[in-house]
Length: 314
Length: 108
Image (cartoon, rainbow over all chains, first blue to last red; front, side, top):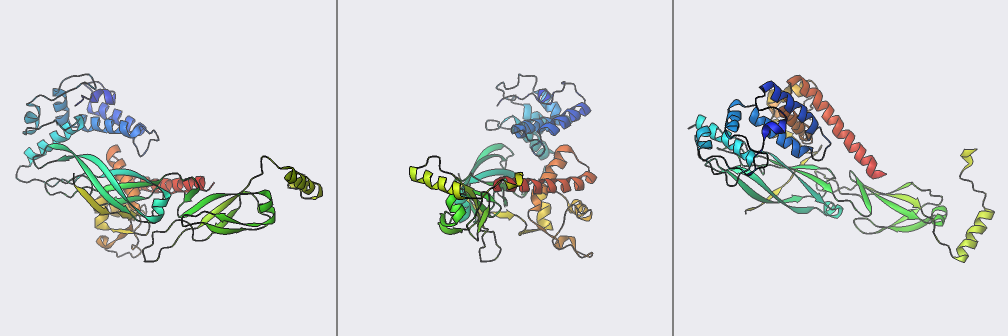
């Protein structure tokens, strides 16, 4: 494992008082807490800061940490053989643990020694995962494979990194940004404590045609100037196959034409599945090159038309 | 490696969790949750009566999103009880505003 200098992480001296440690932690927590900070690297940084604070605010843990001596941050490191035995009354193997586990293990060892015979139940930790699915998968529902590795205590109290593979069925009706809960699929409880939970954050991959808002879909619908002026029936793709849409005469750019019940399925509690709507947002597109015939016809139109879209300028 | 299969529980306005489940999932005590309810920061779907039984209260499962954030902030910033209600109101307002902004951006 690599050594972590918790004093350096918090930016305090090795002889800092508990108040100085708390003050430094609070300042960094405001800066990096994932629920507060917009910094994408904030979460990892906060984890390090939280880990340092959890160790240094506890007098016994701090003493155990100080006993490890001074090492450059990031240096390969292994605790002395009698370190955990002295602190927690129990020998540990740290082969599969990282530096953060070292002090979690120390606490666990201490709890074991303090509560021998009582074995107080300790609930498992909650975890949060993110998964990205396509719009098509969200429309039809999908089973996703969730693979993650979490530290767990075995019955001897030793920390192991345990891989998990969970198949989770995401039913149709899920929305972008939806959060879901898998009860009891987080970290294992200890001494009969309940297992933790797994929270799943679901997001949609960007789609080449559709944008999604709640259960409604939006698609840009390019129209020729003559389709917009004269009206037309055009084919519009949907997630359940193409439909014909009647574009009224005199349509302008940016108008939204609603195609009822062609949006995303809703998560109904009953048997019947309702759907959101699909909105076709019109865009009038002019040809970039014109044939001789097209040019003549448009010039004739320009000469004979009295339409002025800029009357409001006057 | 063992392969497990499971069903997901929706965290949305239609699905509910009981008081017992909310306590278990949020990390708050019943007293803390009742305090949040009393000051109006948290609302139960069936708390309109004044003589409700706390253990029978049911909440929309989406409240867990903000409640869990609140629980993390309480623990990480060592927040006091009085600040929690105010913070929960702001968290919920931010969550709804972010959804609105996302909706407006997508509908452009």
